[in-house]
Image (cartoon, rainbow, N blue to C red; front, side, top):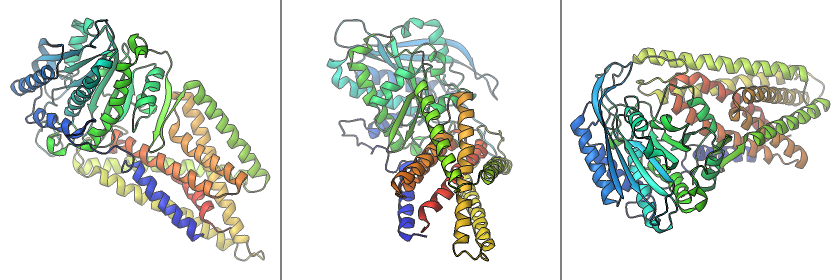
Length: 570
């Protein structure tokens, strides 16, 4: 083992871990006196909004929030502030309780200083908090709406306040829509869309802001269909971008909806949200003491430069400027930023990479560095390990749910398990250590079997063959999974990124003889795995822990042999 390479590997692992979890790859919080977007100023609005529960079951408290927001918008200089009342609504549907209530939507308009009619950017956030929520082994709780959706309201107000400073430059206007009764089935938004469709006729771009928990990255988790031009705008402007087009695909299969759901097929738009922690979501823990300024700042870093481009450039004077029939494929890597591709380009990348991998594999087989039969067995073994990880992860989730008295939903949202993140983190560490131990045990066994050979380096050669067979077997499996998933849903980043990083590092090492390329490949895999799997875990909760374990093990089974190749002496 090369000690210098081992030290370099440890340093890279620590740095990529910090980057993946946002310690070095998210914006710093700006103070209340900042000239830029300030999370502290947003918090001042949230403090007032979240003083009391203000759900549809709290009409007086909700009215006080509505009055505050109406006054706030007028003080900001809105040209008009309209209230739309919708009486005698009921909801939620198919829940433990039904309320009858009146909903009042708030719509403020800020027009450019010129008199020419232009499209508008529309911010959407809801001002009602969650209604009563029964929790396992607890009394019914009520949310204070600090994150959901105090974040959305505060960010919209702060972003608009900053935009008003360059109002002379606007070519487009701003509308702010604060909806009511979102938590009971988007009843306020549905009523406004049905009864006052004219208010949306001049909207060229929607930015909906939600919060599925108080902390973590502000994720662009959904766009409207045909997002190619939207993502070009986002890619060109957003600072500290955070998005995966895969989340739009996954979200389409989940029984969750926002106000954006009502209009996304008609108006181009973005949907942003924090995604951690599920046990703060819709509960009494969603209060002012638990807000996260770093997460709020992350919304602003992405949204404020985006809206400046939209408001000030004449190309967006055409309301259909962001309409497209094509979707893009995109993902982010902390520090490296956003990778955005058209569908056709993404297919070309996949085909090219698979061709390169096949050529590399054939070369290794011909040179005797890979034994194809054993490699295929290793691929099947990796698949078996991944499936076992899937089953084990779901078993851990089931047992945790049973102990906590929470309702278990296989691969679904599970709420009410105290310490669920700690359970998942601890379980993942134990599983990873077990898989590493199995691999090292196999290597020692191979070395012992070869110890009687007359060749001095027989053990090292046998171990190297096992390493290569393992690595290429897993890569074959990833290549097949990549193509299958791409054909099925048009997305495969969770398999493509480790396959790409490993393949290119192996090729570049072959060409240059520099083993440091393996370190680069390892860093990219770790960076992707930690950031993506963290987002996936927070979004899907412990109910989908099995899927997270499976994906983590596939990454791990690439990292183990690649790491051994990098640090070994020969």
